[in-house]
Image (cartoon, rainbow, N blue to C red; front, side, top):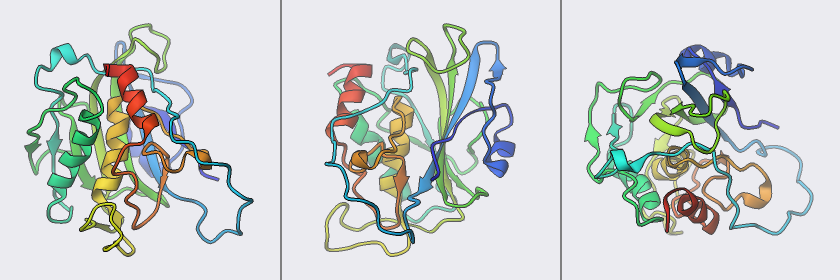
Length: 251
């Protein structure tokens, strides 16, 4: 069963091509480290039926450790969307995904007016929080999130007290993408495509500072680490997602 890959590395493209973890954290610059979270298709497809599920849990969350210093961003953390390769209207779906997390706290987490820039790309520390599409090699990879953070305690890993400095989100352009016309409604359902807003909401949770959850009992929570084509349930946050955001940024 595939598990979350938490990767510290210096060359982002090489890691994606090999899909293998680097065992030791390496600084990008002194005290600045880089981490990546890869989002996979649910591995259960085509496998024998599993034993009866545990009751669903809706109020659990895990923190990455670092968070944004919002005192530096009076109108919220800015981000840039490059819609090249995305379905029409994807920029609005991404904005809605970020705003879902903004609504979980009274703090202004993200700027309400993201920039659109078709020359802004992922995978390098360039002073921009990029959201873009590009082909990623590796079976079952849907998307990934980069986080550059200040390792304030110098322990070489993500921990409370560290500061997020920059993030990138990349959607795998080799997958099929669409936009569900009625959100989480049942009237319309994407077929053989990933819903942009569904995946964007999960990835934005990493940008907030929340970690993946992989046990099946957490599968209704937005930060559950697997997704499926046609899925839309990650669009709305569950109690665990909201409580994690509140712990980081206040009620």
